[in-house]
Amino acid sequence: METYILQLFNGISVSSIYILAALGLAITFGLMKVINMAHGEFIMIGAYATYVMQNIFLHYVDKSLFGYYFVAAIPVAFLVAGAMGFLLEGAVIKHLYGRPLDSILATWGISLVLQQLARSIFGAPNVDVQSPGWLEGALVISQGLQFPYKRLFIIVLVIACIIGVFVFLYKSKYGIQIRAVMQNRAMAASLGINTRLVDAYTFAVGSGIAGIAGCALTLLGSIGSTVGTYYIVDTFMVVVLGGVGTLLGTIAGGLVIGTANTTFEFFTNTSLGKVLVFTLVILFLQWRPKGLFTINSRSLD
Image (tube, rainbow, N blue to C red; front, side, top):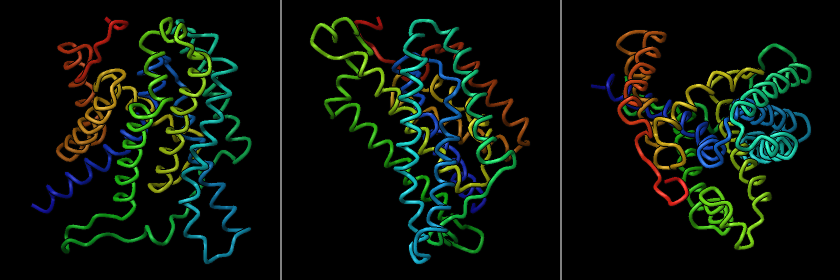
């Protein structure tokens, strides 16, 4: 019984990583319809921002405060990745709206440039980020059932991000403007909304959330210039499976793929488990091409 509970926890834990990585993509791809192949590199930027914050606290801040570096790293990762996203949107993406193939090629090239830039700054080998002391250890339920604090923290962080994105998109003025522009750009512009500015900060917010995902990934192992590449396919799959443009779909897609991955890997192996998940997702999309949840609007109809 403990084994199955532990597998369920591992499934939720893996799902939380997918959801966090896919939240940003749900905005840039789901709402803006931009196929951003550089999304994984924004995850990498968030991870390296955390690494830099660790070194700053290690060398320039009192050692008694070192444990708080990770708390400071979360908003820093969001701001740095968001700023890079803002620059990328203004320099490249704004010229490629409505041209999906061009945007794929352009963002793929940008991802290679960002990876090389990271290697030039931080070196080719992976680097380690030391977890703060308050995240070491595990919540012991019984001798064979322990939940690591790092994983529990990531789950709480994901819940906080989901609530934050929901409030931003559905309760704030900026969120209403974003949804209005994405559903009917001409109507939104006629009502006085600056659609260009909305495009820019929507892309920046999606990139910033990817940065938070990179910050969380530093708790699970060493990071390198390709850390985001490992998640890019899975995050696209989460968004497509859940239903493009829906927050609830992103959460459901992440939970389904994360738990399915750990379950199949438990009964088979890592490679075969991935193949089985891919196969099932493809078969499901043949039956429901729009995913688990769909958005109905006049514009989308």
